[in-house]
Length: 350
Image (tube, rainbow, N blue to C red; front, side, top):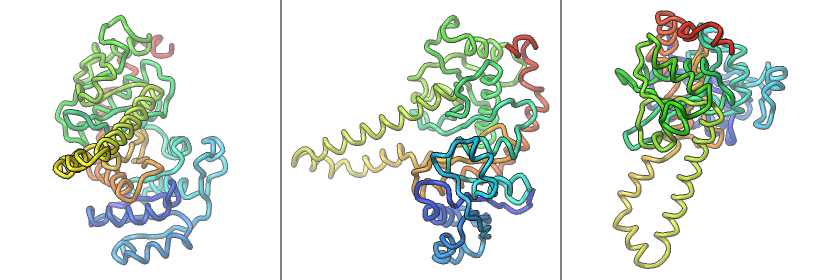
């Protein structure tokens, strides 16, 4: 791996690429002056944008390609036909040791499929998981999986718990993160077999993790635990529901303050407090989902984000690289033993 801090950017991925990618890189450069960038995409479109930011241009290298993976493209098709795409070449740069991390706002399914094919999974991990930040009443919670694995067995959930714990400890700086499994109730007999089985493993394993047991949906926003573990179907629904509710109540709030003269006057006096609230729930501040479990750092930015959101996604990748996340993850799984060894062999294959 390169001794410099180099970030590979899929400059053509996302709804407003490459404009928000280049502008986001400039914002990230100001925050992380030691970072350098590899930009993959159509040079004819990127070069004029890059020319607006001479300092960014001086720390960036262009890699021209006209291939782009479309947002509606199936992962299997992207894997077969996207060898010369901006996404594939950016991921290749991490595999080849040219870059420390790759950031893309492109097709999530394609990013996962190509990353898994090119980078492979770390020893002891069966499936990568999408991990993201979730604002809570206590601060920030780590949540996984957010959509990579719709169906999971107990072994997958156990591995997600370990990956999430390592991430929270390494990147968020939590000394002993607490872990909870999402369920339909906190009682031991509730939930599907896979979730109950995963809980049993986490309660009895020798892994040095602090498992708090089952949590319910209300516990996520309350910040009951530091790491929320669930299958990709449930995690994605929870995430999208939360995003929808935030937009709904933001709309209600705007309508309420526009209702009449007195409500507009109330907004005038409450403006500063409302601005602080908006900053706290701004989805751009939590942009950047990590694909954990791979032999390389891959960060997925929301496809519809703006430059500020994309810059925050770059920041996530830089933080992971600077904290030696992959090395620590590899070390923890090697020293603790593969998670599946914490359970009977015949159960692991069920």
